[in-house]
Length: 287
Image 1 (cartoon, rainbow, N blue to C red):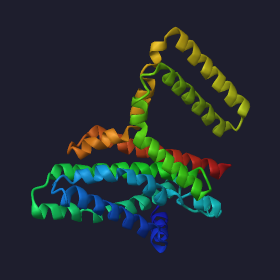
Image 2 (tube, helix red, strand yellow; image 1 turned 120 degrees about the horizontal axis):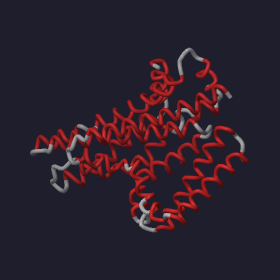
Image 3 (spheres, rainbow, N blue to C red; image 1 turned 30 degrees about the vertical axis):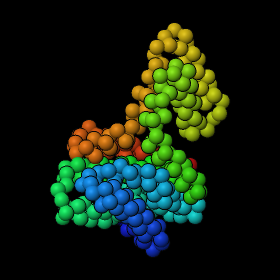
Image 4 (cartoon, helix red, strand yellow; image 1 turned 30 degrees about the horizontal axis):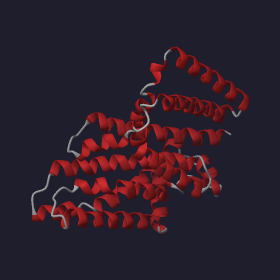
C-alpha cells in the first residue's frame, strides 16, 4: 500500500492536478472568507464551509477521475493486478493519496480562523466541528469518485459521472422532499430500485434474459403490493434518501455537535464505496 500511495502522490505533484486542486480550493475559500467574515465582520467561519461545499462538484472529479480509469486505459492496471500487493492495498493507497491532497488544501485554510481569532472571539467548537465534518464529507465524495473511476476507462466519463453522483448526493434531500408525498413518485421510485437490482444481476451474470425475469418478478410484486397496500409506498423515497443524506450529517458538525452516529455513518459510507471498488477490481482480475 505504501508503494501505491507514494506513486500516486508523485503523480499528483509531478502533474498539475495536485497544484490546481489545492490552489482552486484555497482561492475559493479565501473569497468566501473575505465576503462572509472580513467584509461582513462576522466571526462565524463555519459559514464559509457551508458556502464552498458545492465546489466538490468540480473538485471531486478533478481529484479522482484518473485514479483507476487511466490505469485501465493505459493497460497499466495489469501490472498492478499482478504486483505483490493485494487489491485492498491498491485501493487504499489511491484513496489515501487523494485524501492527503484534500487534507493539504484543508490545512492551508486553517490560517483563516487563526486570523479571525487575532481580531476577535471565535466559536472554537463550531470551527473544529466544521473542519472534521468537511473532512469526512470530502473523503466520502472521494470514495464515490474512486469507485466510479474503477468502472470506466475514460477519464471524461469518470469526471462527468462523479459530477452527477456528487450533485445527486448534495441535492437528494431537496429533490425527494419535494416529491416524496406524491404516491405516483414513490411508485416510480420503487420501480427504479427494482431496475437497479436487475442491473446488478446483469453486471454479475451477464445474462439479459435472467435480469429481465428478475425485473419482471420485482415489478409484479410491486404492482401487487401497490394494489393491496398502497400506504406502504408513502415516504419510501424519503426513507431511502435518508441513507444518502450526507449534508444532514455534516450540519451536525457545523453546529459544533460531535455526533458519534454521524462519524460512524461517514466511515461506513466510505467503507461501502471502497468495498465496491475492491470488488470491481477483483472481478477484473479474475475475468
